[in-house]
Image 1 (cartoon, rainbow, N blue to C red):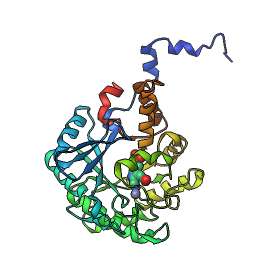
Image 2: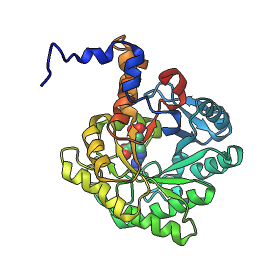
Image 3: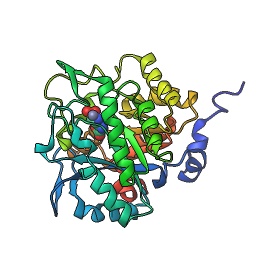
Image 4: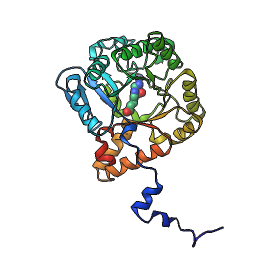
Length: 327
Ligand code: PBG
Ligand code: ZN
């Protein structure tokens, strides 16, 4: 057995050239999806306080956002809608309306950017008055099966507006089967289903809930989102969604869950997405702002970790700054 001093691992790290030859490159822009917030109103590009560098856009200003994105080489968006506050209701029915904010944004984008890949978030929490991801059946209890009926309508309306992929994020049991059946019956066999398959009840969604104004008024989401202390259930969540017909699986959040990403990528042949969530984004910005770390270096290191752990697709708020961060 050869060992030190003959074996010296530093031999293969001597220069940037040799390191690059051995290392995995940073994921290219084609692997990224940029989450974008769309709101009602006109001529609005409203900064999100808790997510510096990200905005709520009115539909007429979307071209500015999309032109920037395309210039980075990134070709995909994940749309989140902020409806008018007075359209919120106990069941979130406004999420299903064909003239809703997401549906309108999708229509506009498909007209102006035929090459852009459009994913939409399918959930009810931005549309329910109580902020939970479906109608309630009791105190703090979401009615699972009723939510599935509504979510299916939401997905069909998004597909009807031209979304290429719908991404249900409500963590209802059976939501993937419900959406696949509903989409197929409505003639949308080609609409891709990207499941938020293992989505944890996480403390890292805070900035997003501020951005979306979608915090639950009472209680939390621990009754439906996955428990981060339970590895076996986390795996079952994704395995079941594969069985129900998901085209793409997802782990969310990403950086605290690389063990799940690595395990899942070994047992599934579906493409695997990770959602580098708002808290993970803002955490790096906050650190850099205090002079405690270099933003670009932290972004590169954390994104490399996502790719290394087995993620094929990276949903990231860094996508609209791809060139600055990754090249
Ligand atoms: C809503 C939804 C959330 C996120 C995506 N879809 C928040 C939540 O479940 O509370 C989080 C995204 C992020 O934090 O960047 N179902
Ligand atoms: Zn939700």
